[in-house]
Length: 224
Figure: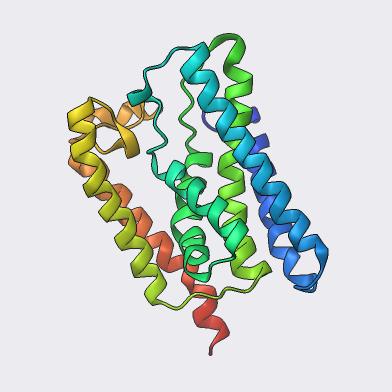
């Protein structure tokens, strides 16, 4: 997919629309069955979306299991999202707002889709369904359910991201994989290969830290 093409802007528009819808869910009484329907529908859609894609890649494309593991940050966020949709856990809801939403939003703005040919369109739809859901669910639990985070949640989320990067890197070296892009930048950002990879990692880490703090600004303003 060509970044910032008309087609890409279409998906960015869908993302914005879904996020606005998730925010507006806060206007609906918490006791309303609509909240349960929304969470169940989203859980079913994302779980089916990810499970069928994993099966397709493993059994049809015959991609080795070590290269098809759900170990990117957004994959981990998906598991957290599915758990939170069922449990309504406040702590994981905070993680989704900071870590899930930011990671998925970066993925929406800079899509890493490698499939080509007849399957490309399906791959793109699958990719955006999952990542748009991640962005929206973080907003839903924060503003729709009103799990307003404390400032310490920004640092917990930031620590989680960096800890995961540290843990996944040895596995990448062992398996020859590149989960969470800790060993190389995404192919779609090939222009970054001219810079040392540590600079890419530092830049991404700073983006997470800055964005997490920006996401907390509305709560600072509300408490004044």
